[in-house]
Length: 131
Image (cartoon, rainbow, N blue to C red):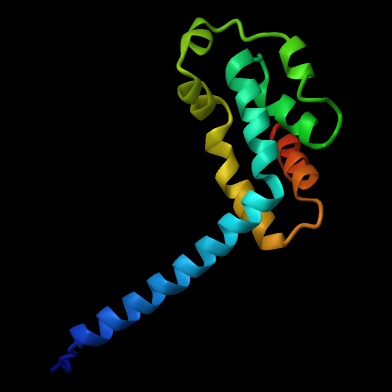
């Protein structure tokens, strides 16, 4: 006969509350780190990508972050020939072209505590693109 195990709902609730508080603390620290270290650069590049719809947005992002290109060069890069990309709303274009790959890179950047966060993010983007 198997021994019955009972779970104390109060203990489960307390453990869940503690885990939630720890998660929130890490999320706040991560957000502060990213805002202070890459936020302005990321916002500037994303704005240019959304406005100019380049053919290779991730490649350009990586090149700008590593210092191989300037933000201004996004304007003169070859444009996407895809009609859907060119006509998509800015947020939709960014979501489909660069945003989906960024979260794990940003988590890694924070976890590594990079001293060169912008260029390290650029290296990650270029590595992901195989460049």
